[in-house]
Image (tube, rainbow, N blue to C red; front, side):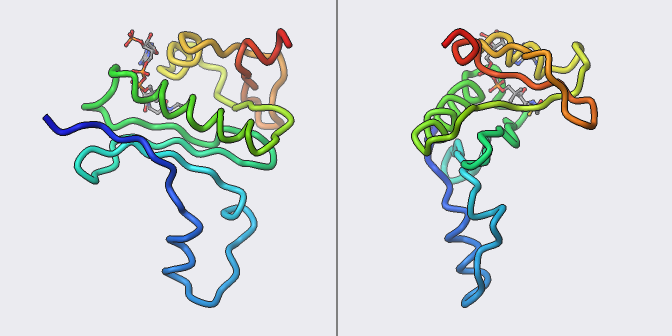
Length: 132
Ligand SMILES: CC(C)(COP(=O)(O)OP(=O)(O)OC[C@H]1O[C@@H](n2cnc3c(N)ncnc32)[C@H](O)[C@@H]1OP(=O)(O)O)[C@@H](O)C(=O)NCCC(=O)NCCS
């Protein structure tokens, strides 16, 4: 059976290859991204900002959900962001408890901080960050 593989995606290198001679846009230069692949096909990805510490995206293809892929991708990215020296790792999600993301982030130990973004999204952090 084909194995799942986890690796950091070099998005900046891909951009340089597609745009020879151009300077990588700052927002992309700061981005860290981890992929889960099966036979070279991406079945999950997770992105974060290595300056602000924000988790920007996390998604797993339907057929591969509930196998621990989201948990592993998030943990690899959080580790990479912390190693990059971010002051805080956080994310913003809509205030809708019916969203799958609520069950997921709660299970993996994240909690709402009580803060909100200007557009009303809830800010969450890993519980361990709040205790330290
Ligand atoms: C949220 C998402 C990334 C989870 O990915 P995943 O690979 O299925 O997550 P895991 O298998 O690591 O799940 C770990 C635990 O989280 C919880 N969980 C995961 N998905 C859940 C859901 N839809 N509802 C409730 N709890 C959920 C479960 O407790 C699960 O453990 P279990 O399967 O043993 O019960 C995936 O459902 C997804 O891509 N959703 C659409 C995009 C999205 O909402 N992204 C997050 C917002 S940025």
